[in-house]
Image: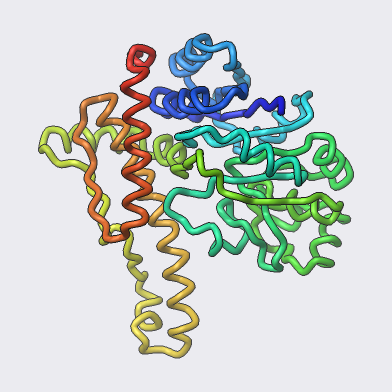
Length: 347
């Protein structure tokens, strides 16, 4: 298949996440379009220069000084696509083995294929309308926000007929009348927030498109790292300098992943109020998923800084043997890519 994947880079990520692109080039023959989304001039120039290192890389910058919302930029990219497929993936997805044969076999049997859940999360348990969710509350399948292959002609028809795109929809006022009616018909709320591409997933199925999600063995997605590097870059850099001075590395521990109930919920979670079983289990699961996403991103941010900036290497101290294996395996992939390409990453 002739596929070109759009990969969006937000501020603070280019220096580190070039490693992910290098791994994709190593284990596939696809082309990759690297998008500058609100990057400052220096970082945008670094991304453009990096694209010159391979004829399978293409640089594209949008003329904005601010960072566009992910869904907004995806809609703009979809309109410009001229190939048979519209493809995108997050910038923190790493390849560790060839994945094209498995991907193309799955894509050939559907209209929308998605993959690459967050590293620490179980995709089978994710029900809702958030970005990581794969099943809507009414049981309909949802595509992810971080790795998708769409048949362009098919999804283009849905977008044109429904009048919606990949954007996040946060209010019933955003829905065209026919979309609101369709949501009522399939039993989904109008007052909920539909994350990037989720509304489009629902409408695609109403128009007869086939959706499928499967993990790809050769790809690993950290999840959320762009958000946390961008959001916390200054604070994290300051903490890293202090940590280096004190010799204290970042530690990913079980304590960091344990949800701590806010005051209004303490009585419920301790069993001193009615409905304890109903509220505590669902609250803890949702809160732990957010903590896991955040702290895994913090861990790998620290790991990148250890490689690139000689900062203290983070410490992994959790009891979950499966997650430990996933994290250490990806660390080995990242370190290998860094060692293979350190001459390209000197900037």
